[in-house]
Length: 432
Image 1 (cartoon, rainbow, N blue to C red):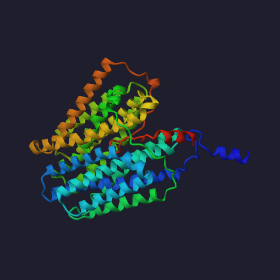
Image 2: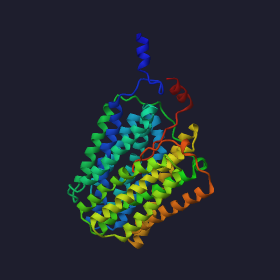
Image 3: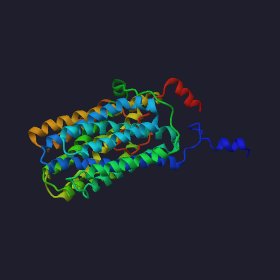
């Protein structure tokens, strides 16, 4: 083989450049896993700290709403940020914003400051996922993309679980939690700062076209609206409610750390089934299971922690499965030219519901108590189940042979968004 032949052999025919080293890909995944540890810790720390300090649970609900508002802004503004400074610098800037958010929380229990701090966090974490996932989507070959993204999601969920569990080990009355969160955020910058992973060309802002996305897949868009509300209701308000019910700091940490197990346990079998039948049947099953688990959560509310853990594991896992199943269902119905606008629109729908629903739950909690989130989650799951059933009755299924391959995802990690390249950049990118 000649030198030229050897050079060509090292070129990835799908991507048009040398295959990306595994260690370079791992740097981005490791960075997000480290951020997840700090994020999980802060999700548990804030409601417990507010409860210990005697603040009304409504404040914790407003903080969740602020976080969601920041996430909505992040999905709109991240594209221009990446276009201006590139993926690596954007990643480090957004990580720095998370560190600043944690520092503001560490300044003491000032609810208004914490609302602003968590809004900043919401903006940054949503932006980080768009940057990380679009970066990986660009550098990873099609043949291994599904496995890499699955590993990405599992690593992030595992990091969240570690962070939740770590909240039992800190002194909740001090700034120890935010300080540990800052440490993990700082550590997360190192792998990306030292990586040799090549950066994609500068993108345009990802386009959002909800009406077009609805024409492509009403069930996919409705699923994102449903799971955006379910995810923020369950993950955001479960620790608030548990604290208000008098569970200890260690109990809240154990409950939260167990919940990600549902994502890991349920998604793979549900995804396997969905690859072999109409995904809408599986979506109905997942939403019905989420509704049933919510009813059990209401019936056993305030009961034995072990029982609640089992219920919340199933509840969280069924709800999270709606996310990945809806994404796969929408992708089955989209053409190649629709994928950028579709993924961006699904992310926007997820973020919009994640902003609106916590506001509703917060308002209802002020009147009916912190268990209001359970009722809201049950209603959302039931409404989505009925909608999918209606679509099944009135429309034709896509044959299983024509569907794509399911990939596990979590609603705690926003959808992969392929930021749209400028026309000239797209041509160059294809020619490389």
